[in-house]
Image (cartoon, rainbow, N blue to C red):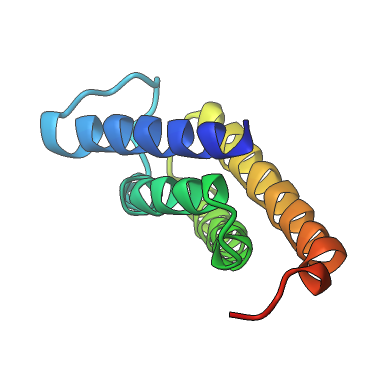
Length: 125
């Protein structure tokens, strides 16, 4: 279920960010913050890759989820600075970033706990 959600996040992020960047589709009241839109487009592909890794139970997917959470924090900070300096923004952007950070942090924690619990039982390749 988590893997399917990750892939869905990726497809949706890529579609919406691509629509904003390349088709000029705007759904919010304020103009989009470019760093957030580019982030959404680029990490949308990473969401799909990590989601497939989660589906296949690959160990690297845990690190991928942790990296995605970390990158989201960096973008959240850039978004915060942008807002602090007076750039208009859609409040939904802050909510979306918080949701993404929470999702990827929870996935990373769950994956690392799963690896710690079951990995010793798996023979080394």
